[in-house]
Image (cartoon, helix red, strand yellow):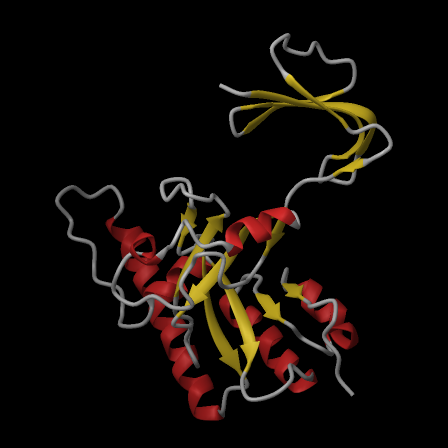
Length: 253
């Protein structure tokens, strides 16, 4: 395997630490070691990064393109990926190494197919890192939609209770989840994260309050997708364990 060493740069580890004049040993396509005064492999190709900054690759929480389809239906995501798309190398050239995408988001209930994809030119096998790790829906909801969602959450709770009762019982057939409840169950069990966007306009304070109420209803943190007024309710968002995804150049009046 090819062994590459990047030496002498100020390495941003990714957790807040910066290692001054450190070395990075890469074997194949994996980082093997990071630190100072490492014993470097004799057959390594050396890149001198003295006076430069070395940072981890950039991960886009949500994006499209880079060889991935904008949407995918019944087929698996692998069937719709083009690992030879020229924009993959353009993304790598500016430091983007991976991104998340979602298709077929829900409106008033969590839904959607998603994938976390690695920019791996020409390598379909290494492209998909994870599947169905997040789902989506939108706010605001009207009173009828809120009632339907609360009913669905209640049915999901009852389903989990039935599963708990059957745990350990031999030959017990698990009940089928209520219609539309499967994504909710995955969110509540920590298997997927819910992304909430604003429908038909900017993510204002009213939509933000509904998003916080939604997190309270589910009993877990969610992601508010581009909430332009989140700064006015940061404490409420933090209380639910939720997060926000913002665009650096997003502007509102």
